[in-house]
Length: 275
Image 1 (tube, rainbow, N blue to C red):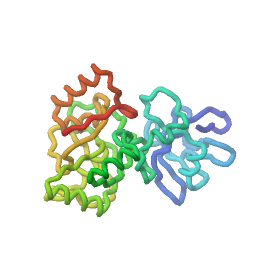
Image 2 (cartoon, rainbow, N blue to C red):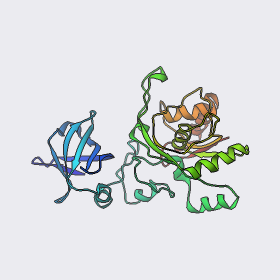
Image 3 (tube, one colour):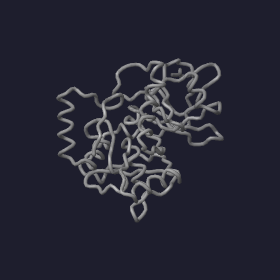
Image 4 (cartoon, rainbow, N blue to C red):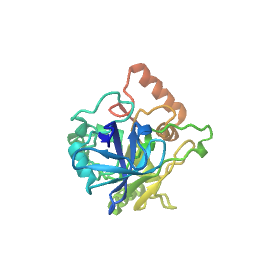
């Protein structure tokens, strides 16, 4: 939270991604956007401020911070950016709770909700059963909250998100696929990353880059054999991916039961396993 120069109006700055490391330039969202124009400065304390250098969307801005290592600064003075459907202010516990226990790399603007169910103990119990666990990275973007507003799904454009699949991860998955063993994928983000990097033979290839892959019915999944995922919002790309995997009728049946039984949806919600 910052204050606009001269007027001292309260402005929320939601940091999305770094655009130029040497010049401390970042892509951000501001709220309320109507009060923030090019040339304005927003002060967060006596030592840290940013200047608006461009408009990108209705709420989007490009800013230049006066200091490097902005993520370190955010750790000191920032708040956890909870999803818009969580109607409360962030609390200190969210820093740990709204995060997976296995997260390593900074970059996502939202937590992968299916991964929130796993604890250190649960992961240890899974490994004891002889199950191999490998990790991939996908930095979830703000587009995960954007509903689909077109009737022709081929016209919907996904926001690009950065992902990484290491050689060792690809090797482990490919050995399992070759041996006709189960590959359980945790979360739609992992599905998108894996299905974005597939060889002609239907195996995973190591990759670092960006994906704007939109998965919706019908879709032939090459890597994902079993899926652990949360209950998602209507009209979302996440629900469409899940419907492509489990079949529309089966997923709608599961969602009707979830609503009837009072299951929790979205982040901090309940999960399901689709076999």
